[in-house]
Structures are given as C-alpha cells and as structure tokens.
Length: 390
Image (cartoon, rainbow, N blue to C red; front, side, top):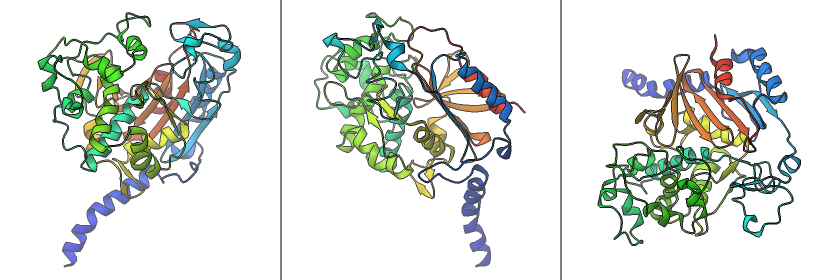
C-alpha cells in the first residue's frame, strides 16, 4: 500500500516541482520581481528600453517580460497615433482626418480609432498572433470532444456550403494540414506587396472570407507544401462554429479566456459575422502573456487542464521545417532555435510578438505598430539575446 501510494504521488510531485520552478499563476495582476531575482540581467533589458525610447525599433508600444510567473520588465511607450497617422493614406487605409467613406470601418489599419488600440481601450491589435490563439481554441474543442481528431478532412466542417467547384484534392486536406498551412491552396501573401495582387488583401476586400478562400485554386497536394496562408487561418472561425455551434470569440471567452483570467478583449468580425481568425484579436499585453504561460504549463492553468494533454508538444512541434530562414512551423506557431534553446513565437504584422522560451520559463510580449514606413530595426533578436545570454 505504501509503495502504491508513493507511485501515485509521483505525477503530483512532478507537477508541483515544475510549478515551483516556473512560478505562480497571476491573479488579477502579475506579481512582480526584479530581473536579477529571476536570474536575468536588468542592464540588458534597460539597454533595449533605451533603444525603444530612441526609436531604434520604430513605434513600439509595450514590452513585457515574465519569468517564473513574475513580471520582471513591464514598460509602456505612449505614441501619439493621431499625429503620426494624420494625412496618411495607402492600401492599408487612411489616418486621422480621413473622410473617405470607403475606409470608415475597423479594417482601416492606419486610423487610430481602430489601430493599434481599439477605440481608446487598452487592448492592442495582435494581427497574426491571432492565428496562434485561434488554433489554441481548436485545441480546447479537441479537449472537450467537440473536435474528434485533427486527421478529419476539414471540409467536413463546411457541409453547409456548396463545395461542388472545389478542387477534389482539397477534400483530402485534414484539419492538421490546415493548422500547419499545408492545405495545398495556392496563396500569395508573403511573396507579394500589400496591394491588390496580394491574396490576403483580396480576402479582406471580399464579402465572404470563407467562400473566397475555398474558391482559390490548388497548387499542391495537401500536406506536401507549406505556404503562408491567412485565408486558411480565417477558415478556423468556420471550423469552431461548425464543431461547437458557437462563434470562436464567444467560445474562447467561456472555455479559454475566462479560465485563465482574461476578461477584456475585442475580436473583429468579417462581413458575414465570423470573427477574423487571421488577425482580428485585440488583447492587453498582460493578458496575451497569460496565453503564453498556459503553453509554458502544458495547457494547465493553476491545476485546471484547459488544453488536452500533449497539445502543447504537438502544437509547437516542427511540422513544417525551414519555412523561412531560421524558422519552422507548428499549429499556427513559429518555432526557432536561439542560443541552443527552442523558442515558440506568435508573430503579427506591425511588430507583434508572443515569445515562449520553455527551458527558461520565460514569456515575453512586444506590441508595436510599424506600418507607416518608418525605418525600424527588428527587436526579436536583441530581445532573445538579452533573455538568453549567459
């Protein structure tokens, strides 16, 4: 009996040990600590802070670093986006003072009413970091049994649509193919400028994003070719709706956000009423960091399992390798190696970053809005250097 009890306690003790190493879960606020108390070097973070203030990294709005569950660096950098955007026009929209009726909506990326903050609220646009979170909601649906398997053909979630004109090859594409951007759908996003030749620009000008994406031609067999495809990410909204009967914003509120303490967010809607799962979520940096901490704890939040066991390992596996120099790809997560350590990254247009460094128990968030053409150095590598250098 004593031996059996000891064996039964091993998983519990292992969890307690990991939890003790990686720190407590936050309540309404993150507990704070000095960098040195968490074995980081404040001078390195202060150097990044000075460069942000000097404009080296362009229009940076917030830098937050969490280690062992404690905020060791949390700085906001107020920007006057009314002044910055005034008189600006382009394919992404028009800024302060714009009277063009065609741009009076929340997909105007240059106007301070809608970007980078939403209507003056503290929630910041995440752009394509949204993809990582939408995929996480699918993980929740898998845990709850509403999605049965990632090997299910994803078109089965769109049976309410006329699929008669869809390329027969797409009928073999699985939900896993969709999550890893290997559906085989031809898509021109990262290889085109932000103009009408860009498939994602076309997507955002269309009325029905799901229909637009499913109407695109195929250029590969499913599972054989990686292509960055925001249309495929937009399909995740339809998957969750079909699987759960609820739109993903409502579903995530109940089953993902509230369990980890997120109460304030905004999620843009497409013209057909689906939440924009390719780039439409807004969160405060402190709340985005909660999602990073959830991944750091294998999908368990303060003793409650939110994501299925094994989801984090699978979602951050290198399903598609060498998709860009130094980058591999998982379930809407970017993966790279820095200083010999795995780093899981949510990346978004304009400079959004969610970093998870599991071996160091670190989560970091960067919010920025570098969309106005001002030269800016990328902050990712200097930040990784500051967090990982011995």
